[in-house]
Amino acid sequence: MNDRPTHRPVSLPPTRARDAKGAPLPATSTTAAADTTGAHPAPMADDASGTHAAPTEPHGPRGPAAPSDASESEPRRSSGARPRPEPDAPTLGTSSVTAPSLGTSPLADPSLAAPSLAAPSLAAPSLPDPSLAAPSPPRTYADFRATLGSEEARPTVRVAPRLPMGARGLMSLLFHGELATEVIEVSLRSGLFARLDEAAARGGWVELGELADELAFVPERLLKLLDALEAMLFVERLDPRGDEPLTLTRYRSVEPLGPAAAQVVGRDSIERDRRAQPWAALHGRLHEVLRGAEGIPAEDFAWPPATPAQVARFARSMAAGVPPIAESFRAAAGALFDDLDRSGPIRVLDVGGGNGTLASALVAIDPRLRVDVYELPELEPLAQDTFARSAHAARLGFRAGDAFLQPLPEGYDVILFVRILHDVPAAQARALLAKAHEALRPGGKVIVCEELRSPERAAIQFFWSYFLVGVDSCQSRLREWSRYDEWLRALGFEDVSLVPGPFDLGHATK
Ligand SMILES: C[S@@+](CC[C@H](N)C(=O)[O-])C[C@H]1O[C@@H](n2cnc3c(N)ncnc32)[C@H](O)[C@@H]1O
Image (cartoon, rainbow, N blue to C red):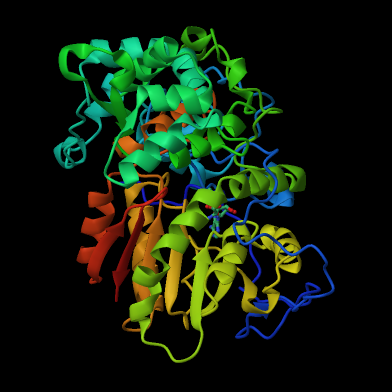
């Protein structure tokens, strides 16, 4: 099992809270951002909708490395193209995210080496007797696999995907994807979805003739649009006796379509934002990219982000994806926080909380919450900037630290992991949850909001999987909720449950 951190080791100052101007506070205190109410005339919107110009989140929380550290600890790649393996470099290897075994050679830092492959050769360069030197690392996957013990090679998690329809049916529908999107857009903008939703909400139906009148559509043409919606399983239908007249055909949505469509095709949709990603570099060239010839150019997408500009861009892109997460917290606030049994404020630590966009949204959603972002120090100015725009800045704080290298700070009622566990190896994800268990008071809660492997998230999984084919330095590990559930129970958490929403929210009590 590979249990080393997947972010680059960063030489960090001790965890230290800072005041609103960035001056260090005593180590035990937390930075409450100055209450700038009034000083900043444009407080952040409650729904946390900030800029949407930036691309949204990739599957991955790799920590931005300190800029000064970047050149020392990791060989930089000049482009996103997959480097060709050096003659002696191991070809395939571990589940490492930084993936030095994918051919970046020589390995500058032994701590980055894949243990089962590169470590032997790095450990023995100065042995006097050549016969004692470590063997050359294996070069093919078959060689590599032969080095694994039977335990390591044994699968332990059953993965059983099921198609919601036949393979041909799904492929055929996907082939018509752009047409389907137009059908959805027109149905949303014309008000058709709203009428179908309204009929379903009152437990009734709406007739084709009524719809055509209200929307000023030709009835026979609208019927075909509704047939298309039915083919996508969005509406159900009651035919008139004997099929005629067609205008008496009744319809309703099978679930609320308007809100779903607004999220997917609306102006601020994550899907729309994704179109701004530099994925186009792969489009039509996937075969060549898979063979390692090309990839996403580093200037288009640097991973992990290293320079201040890259860190800021990545933080903005994560922030663009926060609104549906905030919405999930808003809907689940009662289930998450009501049983915490606190007379005072509920103290929340948002581990890997980025530029504080979610933290800002949370304090706006629930007046009981005080939220500290726990992040790498590079993120502090960005978070302070976000806090300064919040109308609730006095309930926001920042704690600098490294969640992978240090224990999590104590004194919190709730510890959040939002989009930080899903692409680190299992041992690391589990270790973070264990740190949360250690840090929480009895009765405290951990909340897990990750990209899960689930049918509802299939499109998101699809997009990032496609994009990341061209980014060797980033590797995602989407998991079913059942794995997190299993880990939480094994660590001693109780009342483990999942609240479904735009993002599912898992929570458990110590
Ligand atoms: C994928 S982003 C998620 C940000 C935020 N939670 C969200 O969902 O919008 C992962 C975050 O983890 C942070 N991070 C990475 N390594 C970290 C570490 N060792 N300690 C604390 N935070 C870290 C990164 O800086 C980044 O902001």
